[in-house]
Length: 121
Image 1 (cartoon, rainbow, N blue to C red):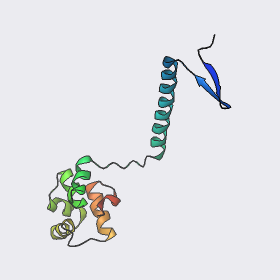
Image 2 (cartoon, one colour):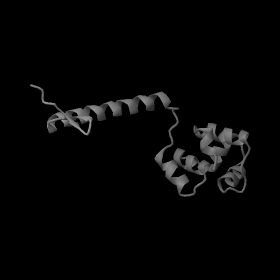
Image 3 (cartoon, rainbow, N blue to C red):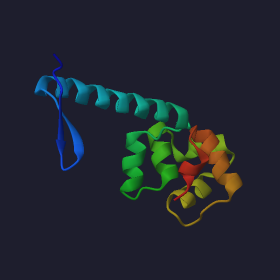
Image 4 (cartoon, helix red, strand yellow):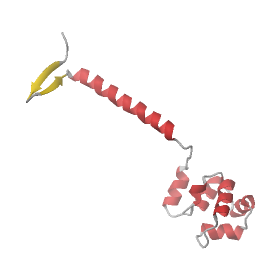
């Protein structure tokens, strides 16, 4: 004897399941959805990771260059040296007095080991 009963109401067919069987079906469907989500994440992953400390600092209004620099534990002087820039120029970028060209931002991103897009405000 099947645990599932078929009902017809107003011409529509319905399956009536015992609660324990329904819970097993529901869990299997949720598991399949979770597996699909993980597969989609793996397929679409671009590999970019923004540390929480950087994300929170930027959300609080800190310039991204400064947020990354502080996260990496670098002084402005050390960052400027690594990027081939002056300390004054790095300071001006961090305080938004200057924006910096794409070449400058690329050098900063490379020095900070951060994605170029993360340097943009």
